[in-house]
Length: 144
Image (cartoon, rainbow, N blue to C red; front, side):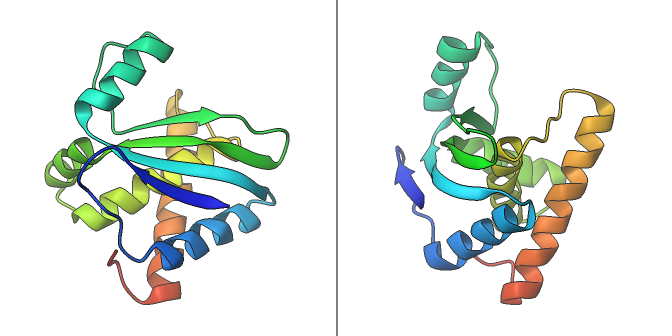
């Protein structure tokens, strides 16, 4: 089950469509969906999690708390809507594209992908691009 929660005024559109896309990613990775929660929040909320749980005093766009057992995916993915908007502006992409990117990014961590080394980051970006292409082809849109 994929669920969406909000700690900010933002509300995700097309929840069923996005859930179907995320479930397709999970299936394509040979994993099984148990329970994945997306929690949309602001910078302050995510910064506090980053400091309290990861001992990182920095802003970030996404934090994944992985409770997976083998290929059974379970966890919480926190996303700062403010950071996504800033990153979309910085990278000159739409807010929707950047949000979809961080949503699948968190999920790929649960599937076992890392992004700390340059080599791992390149593979992660490739998986994100592949997932974004799947979304666009499956729904013929980049809209949320």
